[in-house]
Image (tube, rainbow, N blue to C red; front, top):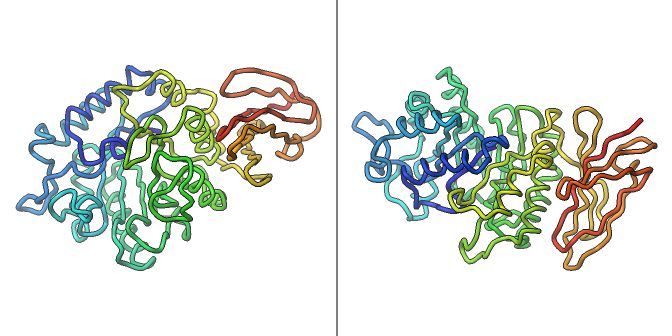
Length: 379
């Protein structure tokens, strides 16, 4: 759980923004809710490496240097993350939004040591190139995995094999032997649906459809990553943003998918409703359940769906998911979601309402909404 700069700020980042975001993660209650990682994405670096080949911070954007920034974040009780690529150019460099060619290809061991010396706790490593086969990607991602391990520092390794690449290999190969988490799709945007099967840009439901069949790859220590959260992200590339109902559904379904929960909104100016969504303890408990099993779509009635995620201790999280353009009642039987006959305590994780079910789970679900239930056997 954490935050990444890209979804809201893109290349428009600097040292003060990141420090203020770390402050806000603590003051907003997000840190108390479990968010830990503050990750700076693309455009943090000097466009030229140092004379010895080392990476260095952009001197105007990050005048105190990356180690000082990491120390500040650690001083808040948080962890620090950074971005790099296994090719010659980062995404912003390849797209012409940032100068230079400072990717890690040929510099993996040096860069991994630099990250460890700076106090990096999380590396986002993004292919961002149309070149290379799946075998090339496996080899490149493995080189950095080994380089990180050789430092002796515990660094979460998050990879993306999809950006700029015609073959979306994140959804075609089980990366669990290489990375801690791996992107399953192209980049997400703050929109309910684009209709793209796995091409840029992706909407919430498009990503769900790609990621759900990969559920068996997920588990403790190795996670499918359906990309960062768009909760509270507005007016990006012509997308106005999700409604609050859609944001709750997005957050709920990422919890059901056992996905990394990486916020992407401006934490310094967060509306109260967005803060409530991002810090909902009941939903986050489903997300972070120690059993680590991803949800199964147990029923698909067109745009009306029932999802079930078994939890540690015998509870089951159930999502009644309405993808349609009209409100609808969705009903499921407890046996359908993996529960034995008998009475069950049902908690609506968004309203807090509790009830007892003796075989049926039913709710009126709003347009583009989810009713997320935690169901506990009483016998």
